[in-house]
Image (cartoon, rainbow, N blue to C red; front, side, top):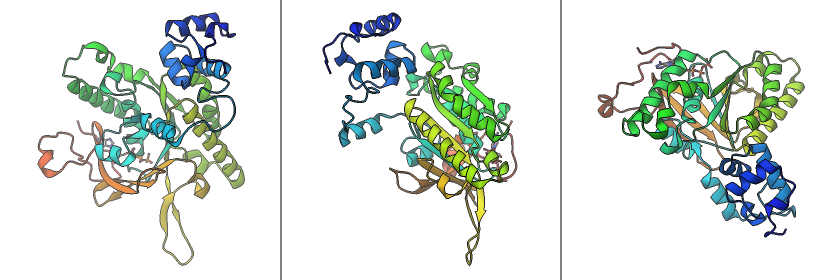
Amino acid sequence: MQTQRELSSFPIAPVHKTKLAAAGFIIVEDLKGMKPSELSKETGIGMEESLDILKLVLGTDGKGDNSGHVDKSALDILKQEQSLPHIVTFSEQLDNMLGGGVPLCKITEFCGAPGTGKTQICMQLAVDAQIPECLGGLEAEVIYIDTEGSFIVERLVDIVTATVEHCKEIAGGDQDSGELGDFTPERVLSRMHYYRCHDYIELLATIHLLPDFIKQHSKVRLVIVDSVAFHFRHDFDDMSLRTRLLTSTAQNLIKLATTFELAVVLTNQMTTKVRAGESSQLVPALGESWGHASTIRVILYWEGQERYAWLYKSPSHREARVPYQVTMGGIRDVVTEDESHNDDTVDTDKNPTKRQRVT
Ligand SMILES: Nc1ncnc2c1ncn2[C@@H]1O[C@H](COP(=O)(O)OP(=O)(O)OP(=O)(O)O)[C@@H](O)[C@H]1O
């Protein structure tokens, strides 16, 4: 590769050449090590076009030379992993258990029985992904795929309002200051792209079309499917077809996560597994092969009157369990007696099956 070759000598669209030059990318060397998302961010060129430019100039997707050989050290990979941002859940304990929150480039699956808080976590993440960059957030757009009809927009508004207020408090209460002035409930809601899928065909079609949508909306950093199990559990007689479709869905989602550097968050239901001679057990639905689809799996459950999140599968963090609560403002840590007198968002819901609204 001629590292000193000028980018203007490549067959790149003139408009993109101008943007590259304006952002300081003049020769091949300048693009080395760039990821499509970084190039897109720095130049304002779309994600797909950035990928094309990197392929054209470097012969790859920008991650190395075109020899096809391994071109990274373990240290490079470690640095890359450590630099990947996370989306916080607003429960510090849950974030710590996950290594900082829900990671980009991976699939995280929240499994749990009805009422454990899967949808609440999805909504909280959908809002938190939009926290402004000046507060360390991703300022992202979000895709929310709802298969169950459990997306209650009034509930989302509660979480959005609390999150916006919280961010403004952190920023010093100056509501109109700088970039935070844009972080309003209306803006957060308008940057959440909602799809309602009524059957598995609509779900598969939506997932299939996501890459095109994301190319048009390069700020998308979170794709939520709540729940992935619903239609696959109810609409199927042919189990081998189901397995094939689930396998290709998992492949599409992981490709989406890595290509566009975004987090995929799925929810899954629980089902009863009965083994001969053993007592029955609640396990995540969709079978054992689906268990390999997600990189990280968290099981939500009740213990007495407290909600717990159990990190059941993770390639890099040890198994752990932490309590969390669902408050009017969203997901939070469980507060102790001492802390609670200062907190007006205590989990008043002691009945796991009842949706309670705090006014
Ligand atoms: N405003 C609120 N304040 C406190 N808790 C709330 C509030 N709104 C909902 N909840 C609680 O959230 C829980 C419901 O969570 P969620 O809908 O996320 O469950 P889920 O795991 O997605 O269940 P399902 O599988 O039935 O969709 C209920 O226990 C409900 O009491």
